[in-house]
Length: 307
Image 1 (cartoon, one colour):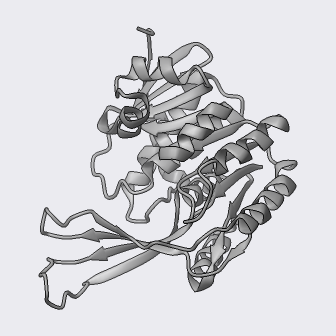
Image 2: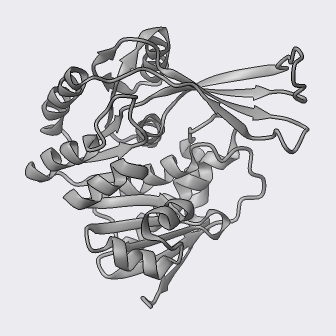
């Protein structure tokens, strides 16, 4: 079982808004809602592929009940503490107005106290014994310690569990200091954290504390560095419907590849196929197994030389 940790889940709302007029009433043409948050996307992708998946998240209010129920309707097992307040909603607007298209608005979400974090940690430790691997993804609620991921990673490391991490900012900085098995970051996060988006320079810096690095550069695809090999993987997608959650699904594919003991090339192939599959439909942060199966043979991989 792969345990996915999502401290800050959300309701992801896809809304069609023809235009936006300041100071006036603006009507949404249609909207669809999906369970969201980076770790939620990871857990759902693993479950859709057919592997054992469990989601640990912090649930708050009616929004939390909705997200939890939506995940469980898809057969995903969920655990986690309850928080006061409401889990956030994240809106992505589609529009004929190019300046508005794919604009995102995010609600603040609930607050996590030290007591709530202790509750989450206790549940994490209970689940850890059953997990073959852990994926930790996304932001934390307000009030959380900047070392929250680091503390969970320390517990996982002490119990011999590999952790795949996808986060940014202070949480990433502290987590890296602890040492983590795997890390996914995009070129913007690499620039922010490493001071460069150059693949080779970023890899050199990150490998001081990280064994596996999955660095994504948009249309340029995935660069995966692991066990002394650097693999580039990419695939051409004819029509991109939405990129929301692509990186999360890619993280799920990489984690699955590692958990199955695949070669570095096959791990990269899984990651690229999962990420690309998420682009093909309007379902935010979700994949369909049939899409991944069709894309896997189309992935073009190439082994690169470290600079």
